Image (cartoon, rainbow, N blue to C red; front, side):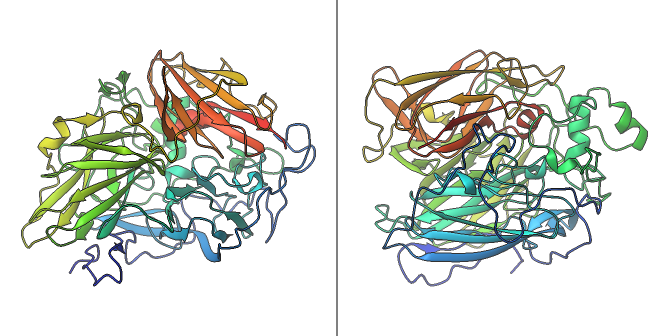
Length: 562
């Protein structure tokens, strides 16, 4: 049995958790991950307060204090994670030097029950500061992991204990919220179980999708950002790369080696001219043109990733999930990529969508779905007899990755497998879903309307909101208890996944509310109308979840206090 195979254990209950290739075995720690040994300012020690008076981004200087206490029925769940440099194998003997949690790619799942208090201590063994953002969780504001807004970055050699209650069951994940660290290997699923789970299934398959560039032929996210921005500095949470006096201490590329250059059939798009810095050091030009998608309204992306991964594996050496014919399997799909939407289908099967971004929807049958960066979907399938590719196309880029569902002996599908389901009924967004009645937002007139316009273009890569890049002093203020209607207008030629911290919103319709979400797509020259209740005081980021857009400045803050 290969390292990524997972035999099916005898379940203790009908809902056995089978795991499916979350860890890449044989990871070895290195001294650094694409980084220098600099130790920029900003650390917390073991415990840190919430936003401090007068801190950048702290609004009117009031402290954001915890507003929740553990449920009497909930338990305290403690975990320890280490952010560390590592060399990991991503398939086919390819190794890359990057940064990960606990030496694994992806990080091992954290699993708790709704109502529990999670206490996770992150030890930072990186050569730079970091934070953890708990994507999709309606947690207290001082645990949200946004540097210089809700916490000081965790310094190199320091640690910080995140402690919060998990109020809602669902599929979530966690990742850094500082600089370009998302485009490394620091991410992991956070699964919050429902103590009264209504779904009936035999097994669970957690599927993390990723676009990969770090350590491949000397590339790093910083190289890519410099190529996109033509040397212009970051305008978002790039403070990891500023020392005490503002000196540039960005990590240097690792020079890691990976055999091969992507899966067969991967798109080699027409490159732009390389920037002077990339020509000087002869690192690969990773920019692309011609990435187009009808489902995304035109331009699909700007980065030609050499690899796409499912659960840390390339399609020529895929992660495998073992089950029995007839098993009812819950898929938990998470797009942990930095710049790539994926079109996902399981060969020979239809999917029944049950949840979007952790919240239940009225069941919807589809052959395939499109999942943007930061989004999550849960789906049920009934396993057939055989060996089947779970294929994720890099939408508009023509690259792909694959994992395998195995219920019988037989040869693996080839890495170029393209199930017919990819071209059949495709769910392009959550707009086609209806919320389950248990989570449907009640109808009431909004107390306040907040309008935010996404602006910028690909040529200058000057992404921002309302024609300006992010600055911590620009805050959209609302009042505690209000029903807020958020109107996001996309004045650009490119699609954007819109993520709001600390809340879920309802996609507003003409006569009713749509699915509950925390990340949703706004197409070019369209608008997204989102309703949410201001019931979780704090300073909350609203941003595009394309990492390179947000780091360029497509980010703003919504703030209110109790």
